[in-house]
Length: 326
Length: 227
Image: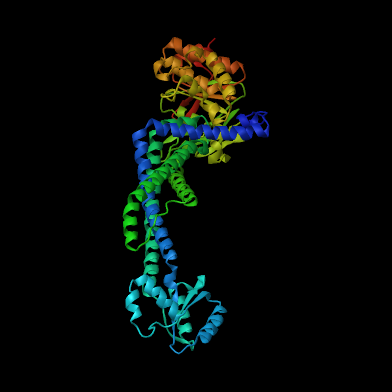
């Protein structure tokens, strides 16, 4: 509606079109502008590719590190039996007493599972696995104690909680000693925590850099289009209308940068997979690195688009305002 | 339609461009604004299109005080004012059609409506056959007519022209002014700033003369008064 002239229709929205048509026109206009911005990028492939490349590679680094950390966490989760506690029972403990201990422990809320391994079974297993079967025959008596394997519940696998559980278990009358290989677990957890923080810090720094780079690129675009912006302002374009193509450019930078990051991550992981497998085979484990899951990919693309949008938004807010017809 | 009430404009730095200017242009009127360069013609036009704000006084269009118009409303004000510039202000990398269509695109018209209105506007200025050309391939007079087509394509009630005939020979200038007369006869208020006194002398229109920022005459051009 015209401010100055009552009754003078202004713009398509003032003409008699119904709501549905206006709704459709809104999207048609946006799609037109989005494609227009994409066309602009296409017409300057070198400049666009450089910006998109910087954006993509800046996102690749934290994404790859994030995946590596996640995979390490997965490995440590796979080796949860490291948090398994072995209780060696006293020699004179009878089978009945051991059974009593077992039933008692099963009622503990901290404990997920208990398995009783009698000394004889343990010896049998040792014979089979060690290849020292014949040598064992020469032993007069079974040197192994009865063992109870305790798997702590989920909340008690963390190093400190597991340690507390171990101390509690050692106070049991039947228990000679308990063993929990906790040191390396603590180190692993500590390392993972540092790694996660490092990934976050690197990520934040690179994201800020990306915002600045996109902002600067958009600033140059705006300056290049100075004359066009002046003319548009003269014939009554709102700031929003002038901003939109630049925001779409930022959007495309973000989206295409995200796609580049995605491809780069795939290539890097494929490259690393063989060496990781070789490493894992040393531990008698077959291990395949898990790439980007669907949700992680979506998060990465979303983040990338947001970075592009924020960078361009900061730039248009500042610089389009500065261009005023004189 | 356009009313100036005791309007003064002092630029930062102390240069006084307009001083206590008072006038009124009625709806449907066509008037010339003249004076030497530096007399304040451009400043006066800029106050109407809100490229500048007055230091003192009020500018009103259709009874609306422009001082109360907020920054983000300016775009909508400019949609009511067709503006024509000496330097044409065309986009050189866009076709004549796209240049003329720009105000309609900005206002969100659909494809068909745009094509219809741009065709009509180009028809009026006699450039329909050149719709697909780039402005750079046109002569100065033709470029100016593209600018005029763009100014009138959304049928504004008010036309402002800043030295529209500045670089044109007398014959072409006359053609341009005839165009303005056509729009004026269709009910559009027209204000043309020009220092081309010869042109004004041949026309019988109200003339506002500025000298050093002051309005010194307001009436028919000197050449006309003697008749």
